[in-house]
Length: 104
Image (tube, rainbow, N blue to C red; front, side, top):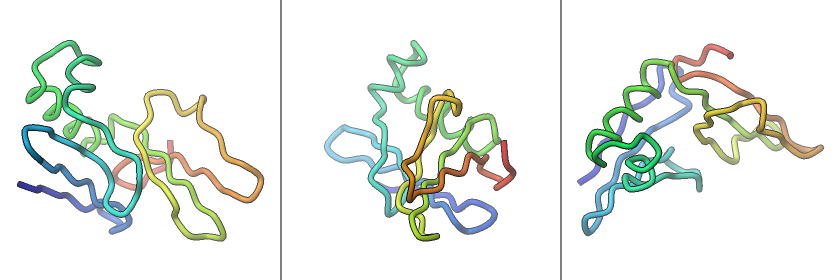
Protein backbone atom coordinates (compact mmCIF):
# COMPACT_ATOMS: atom_id res chain seq x y z
CA UNK A 1 0.00 0.00 0.00
CA UNK A 2 1.31 3.45 -0.89
CA UNK A 3 -0.06 6.93 -0.27
CA UNK A 4 1.41 10.23 -1.40
CA UNK A 5 0.80 13.97 -1.18
CA UNK A 6 2.34 16.65 -3.38
CA UNK A 7 3.41 20.03 -1.98
CA UNK A 8 1.54 23.08 -3.33
CA UNK A 9 4.59 24.11 -5.40
CA UNK A 10 4.96 20.59 -6.84
CA UNK A 11 8.54 20.17 -5.58
CA UNK A 12 7.95 17.52 -2.91
CA UNK A 13 6.02 14.27 -2.87
CA UNK A 14 5.56 12.88 0.64
CA UNK A 15 5.18 9.12 0.33
CA UNK A 16 3.95 6.59 2.87
CA UNK A 17 4.79 2.96 2.03
CA UNK A 18 3.84 -0.17 3.88
CA UNK A 19 5.91 -3.28 3.31
CA UNK A 20 5.65 -6.46 5.36
CA UNK A 21 4.32 -4.62 8.41
CA UNK A 22 6.86 -1.79 8.21
CA UNK A 23 5.62 1.73 7.49
CA UNK A 24 8.11 4.14 5.92
CA UNK A 25 7.63 7.84 5.23
CA UNK A 26 9.89 9.96 3.04
CA UNK A 27 10.09 12.22 0.03
CA UNK A 28 9.90 10.47 -3.33
CA UNK A 29 13.22 10.37 -5.15
CA UNK A 30 15.36 11.22 -2.12
CA UNK A 31 17.21 8.95 0.33
CA UNK A 32 15.93 10.34 3.64
CA UNK A 33 13.04 8.49 5.26
CA UNK A 34 11.72 7.53 8.68
CA UNK A 35 9.80 4.56 10.06
CA UNK A 36 6.62 4.18 12.11
CA UNK A 37 8.48 2.50 14.99
CA UNK A 38 10.92 5.43 15.23
CA UNK A 39 8.06 7.93 15.21
CA UNK A 40 6.17 5.90 17.82
CA UNK A 41 9.18 6.03 20.15
CA UNK A 42 9.79 9.71 19.42
CA UNK A 43 6.20 10.74 20.16
CA UNK A 44 5.59 8.11 22.84
CA UNK A 45 2.38 6.93 21.18
CA UNK A 46 1.07 4.06 19.06
CA UNK A 47 2.88 3.74 15.70
CA UNK A 48 -0.25 4.27 13.62
CA UNK A 49 -1.10 7.45 15.53
CA UNK A 50 2.54 8.60 15.32
CA UNK A 51 2.52 8.28 11.53
CA UNK A 52 -0.74 10.23 11.37
CA UNK A 53 0.69 12.97 13.64
CA UNK A 54 3.93 13.18 11.63
CA UNK A 55 2.05 13.56 8.34
CA UNK A 56 -0.35 16.13 9.82
CA UNK A 57 2.60 18.11 11.20
CA UNK A 58 4.29 18.17 7.78
CA UNK A 59 1.17 18.99 5.76
CA UNK A 60 -0.01 21.71 8.16
CA UNK A 61 3.36 23.54 8.12
CA UNK A 62 4.22 22.67 11.74
CA UNK A 63 7.38 20.84 10.58
CA UNK A 64 10.55 22.24 9.01
CA UNK A 65 11.72 20.68 5.76
CA UNK A 66 15.32 20.88 4.58
CA UNK A 67 15.97 21.02 0.84
CA UNK A 68 19.58 20.38 -0.16
CA UNK A 69 20.63 21.63 -3.60
CA UNK A 70 23.83 21.10 -5.53
CA UNK A 71 24.31 23.03 -8.79
CA UNK A 72 20.69 24.21 -8.38
CA UNK A 73 19.38 20.61 -8.41
CA UNK A 74 17.62 19.16 -5.37
CA UNK A 75 19.69 16.20 -4.11
CA UNK A 76 17.91 15.49 -0.81
CA UNK A 77 14.94 16.53 1.30
CA UNK A 78 14.20 15.72 4.92
CA UNK A 79 12.18 16.79 7.94
CA UNK A 80 14.05 18.30 10.89
CA UNK A 81 13.08 19.19 14.44
CA UNK A 82 15.86 21.77 14.74
CA UNK A 83 16.79 23.69 11.57
CA UNK A 84 19.62 25.48 13.41
CA UNK A 85 21.47 22.15 13.59
CA UNK A 86 21.37 21.54 9.83
CA UNK A 87 24.23 22.49 7.53
CA UNK A 88 25.63 22.05 4.04
CA UNK A 89 29.09 21.95 2.47
CA UNK A 90 30.63 24.63 0.26
CA UNK A 91 29.16 23.50 -3.07
CA UNK A 92 25.65 22.91 -1.67
CA UNK A 93 22.78 25.20 -0.73
CA UNK A 94 20.47 24.34 2.15
CA UNK A 95 16.96 25.79 2.08
CA UNK A 96 14.71 25.52 5.13
CA UNK A 97 11.03 25.67 4.30
CA UNK A 98 7.57 24.46 5.20
CA UNK A 99 5.31 22.17 3.16
CA UNK A 100 3.46 25.17 1.73
CA UNK A 101 6.84 26.40 0.39
CA UNK A 102 7.06 29.37 2.71
CA UNK A 103 10.46 29.95 4.27
CA UNK A 104 11.06 29.50 7.96
